[in-house]
Length: 416
View 1 (cartoon, helix red, strand yellow):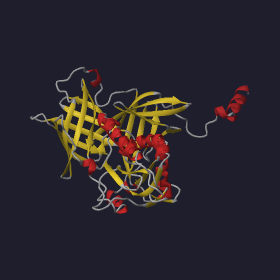
View 2 (view 1 turned 90 degrees about the vertical axis):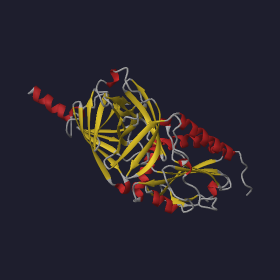
View 3 (view 1 turned 180 degrees about the vertical axis):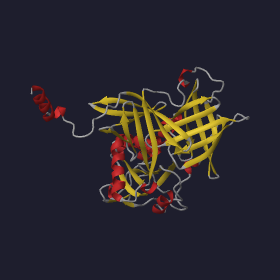
View 4 (view 1 turned 90 degrees about the horizontal axis):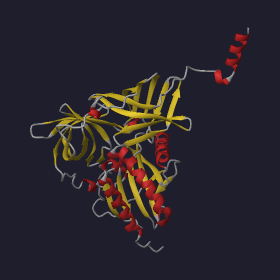
């Protein structure tokens, strides 16, 4: 009888009650994850830790760390919502193994669902013992002139790699921005690189031909694949692509009127912006390079707002539905603690963006950034953004953006 009463008491106590399936334990430490895409296995690692009593997951790509705080474990179902993106992983947890799906939100709100698995305790990427190899007959360290060729439309790029033993890290600079932090290896005559950082699903494979040139393929998610080749060239450059977007002949000014996340219409010609230096950036919460730029711009705005700098981000989202687009922008703002103006300008289509800004000759990349002086004249336009993964290129871009803003702020405001 005493045992029966004890069991009944335990059932009544909240500490003993479970209203759903048993909650599994997400083990702290390193996990090796794999996404299955047409190019094969795309591996990455993540780390699990506790912060204020809640699990935090950190995606690892070479030196890069992306912290995920929206982690939900309900019974055995784990949900990871990517910071600043609408993408998410939903997987079933069974001991030290996860199995589920990464859902990537694409243009017009389409869902791309990629099989996902992860094992606890593994920290290797492509090969279990690659990190133990201290030397390699081939070293890819250096700068490479790259050509990407998708559907017969070649475009230039620059590859920058660092190799230690068989481990390789690096990135690609392209006409629209960089590929952010990549990690992988050179092993058995093949280069393999991968990345999943919440916004990109990238896999690269290549071999060296008889002329010492890399020849391979690049996969992005489930739907895109293109050939790429590269040759060593310490002077490799993407040329003047950063100047692709320009005002149409005879134009000096930009004008627009779009709603903010609350639905209120905002125009560049509103009195609030009059007499100020304004940066206008064409961006989207789905765009990883836009995330890199937003992290920089949010801090620049905090530093120079008192001196007369304002920023307007025209957000071209994956959703044509305003409430969905606004929700995505809210998350983007929260991710980078953005205080500047963000407007819902259209969908994530370059032709749509160009049609909404007819003063421009076209929109060729997200982000595209315009610098406007105190009189409302567009003084500079930059296409694309090279983020922190590009090292000295990022430092130069930050210095150039900052010096441009400082020069415009030093000019006198027009008389009212």
